[in-house]
Length: 105
Figure 1 (cartoon, rainbow, N blue to C red):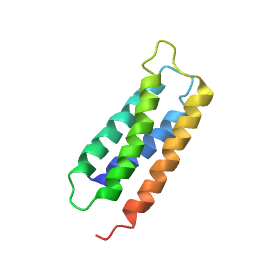
Figure 2 (cartoon, rainbow, N blue to C red; figure 1 turned 135 degrees about the vertical axis):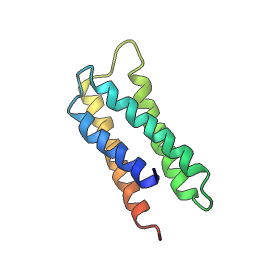
Figure 3 (cartoon, rainbow, N blue to C red; figure 1 turned 90 degrees about the vertical axis):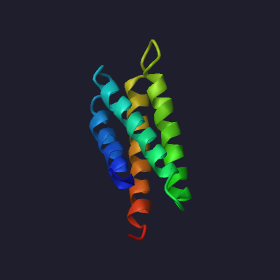
Figure 4 (cartoon, rainbow, N blue to C red; figure 1 turned 180 degrees about the horizontal axis):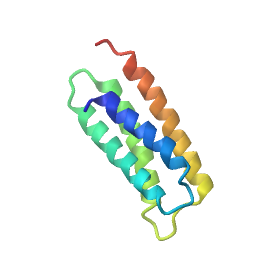
C-alpha cells in the first residue's frame, strides 16, 4: 500500500458512506475513513523529504478523527452533518490525490 492507495480508499469510503448517512450502517465507513487516515499519516511520517504529504495527512486525520468521535457519542450526529463531513473529506482527499499525483516518480 502506498500514499495514493490510502487516499483513494478514504475518498471512496466518503463517496459510499454519504448515501448511508442517517442509518446505523454509516459507522462502518466513518470508522474505515478514520483508520485509513491514521495509517496514511503514520506511513507518510517516516518517508524522507515528505513533509508536505505528512502535513496533508495530519490535517485529514484531524478531520476524520472529529467525525469518528461524533459517532462514538450516545447520540450520533444528524444526516446533514454526516453528509457535510463526508463531502469535506472527499474534497480534501481529491486535493491530496492531485498533490500526490504531481509528485515525481
